Amino acid sequence: MKRQFKKLLLILPVLFLCFQASLLYSCNSWSEGSPAESNALYLPLNDSDYPYAGLPRLVIETEDFRQVRNKETKVPAYLQIYNEKEPASQIYDLTIKGRGNSSFVMTKYGYKIKFAEKNPLLGMSKDKEWDLVSNFRDKSMLRNYVTYQLAGILGDDYYPKCKFVELYLNREYLGIFLLVEHVKVSKKRVNISKSDSSFLFEKTSATSTDGTMFTSSLGYIFKFCQPKEPDAYSQELLKNHVNDFENFLRSKDIYNLDLIGDWIDIEDFIRYYWIQEFTKNVDGHRRSIFITWEKNGDVNSPLEMGPVWDFDLGYGNSRDEKSIPEGWLIRKYGWDRFLFKNKDYEALVKDFWKKNRPSFVATLDSIEAMSKKLEKASENEFKRWPVLGNDTDWPFMEKFDSYKESVDALKYWIEQRIQWIDESL
Image (cartoon, rainbow, N blue to C red; front, side, top):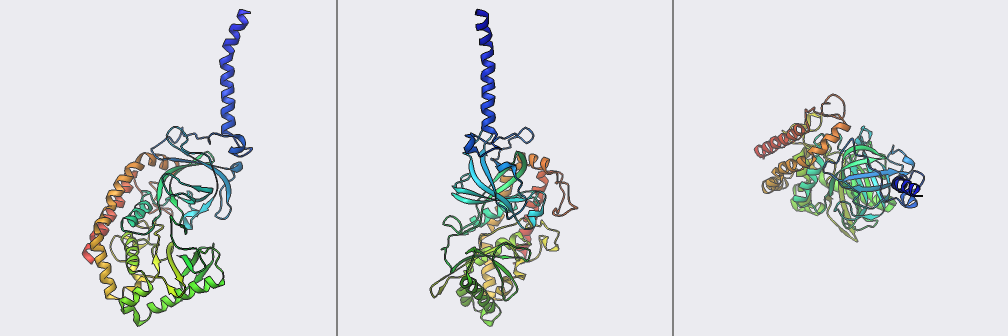
């Protein structure tokens, strides 16, 4: 009897470990159902190949491990945030789909996620909709981030808040992404009313296929963002107003600054202009350009630019000859080419640079500080996507021997750009 009792004592720990392993597996494996159905405590994370590097980790698994292959299909999924050693959030229900225009056809593409309920992510305001931007063509991964911060420093009413994260999708490491607030109308984002005469719209390109669009009298293509599905009245109201504004731009009234102020928020337009011109953003005059306008009864609010968006082709990161630090870009295109005919308007543009120059210079400090926070994670990024030395295939511009070298190249371009602007005003 004593021998049997001793054997039982030896076996009990083994049985307990087996029970723990079985319980852990049931918590981690839910391919047959949702985490809620299996009472899962956390989504599995294997970071043995890509260890913790100081950034939050987003762990996403789709139902039945379905692939995310297009921008239309919303795939049901679950998300959990991890810190270094353990989950830092509950498991959230959401949908995920692809996002981006030219960026979507890259090897590392972006995603749009939408939660079932509003959630505050990583200290940002509560909402359902977020974008995961890949920054694949930007080897510094900093162009979008520092520009959004610049917009806030310069006084934009709203600029997209964002955080760097590392993404695991269906148990595969996908690299560093910028988790960004999706541009939309809401109290914490683009704060305008939701009505059939209140608009958030985007200047886009012919390659865009989603949403309701119209072509203006100058041949520019605009897409409705709010309302998303405008009725005939809303479509005509906005199109007619944009066309009336473009007719004004082509008239002799453009030489009267007070009349310009009846159509646009001049300070807002100038701030937006300088963000695009300073970065010499190749997309800054042709697409990803957001604008707001409201009509309240018989009163037309001024057109306002923003929020700023999409700077992966800025700061010299393009094969386009326009990407060198020297030369004006934005003022030669779009609505700006008409506004700059007015010398009083141009004088205000010059004054804005002189007043706010320290804020533009401060982007160098922002780049230095954030690049240090990304340095360790960049080892994971370029292990997963070994593209630092690629300068021959689209979408890459320059090759670098290290992440630091890509950051130094960005800083040098900005220094040259500031010097050229100072000498040219």
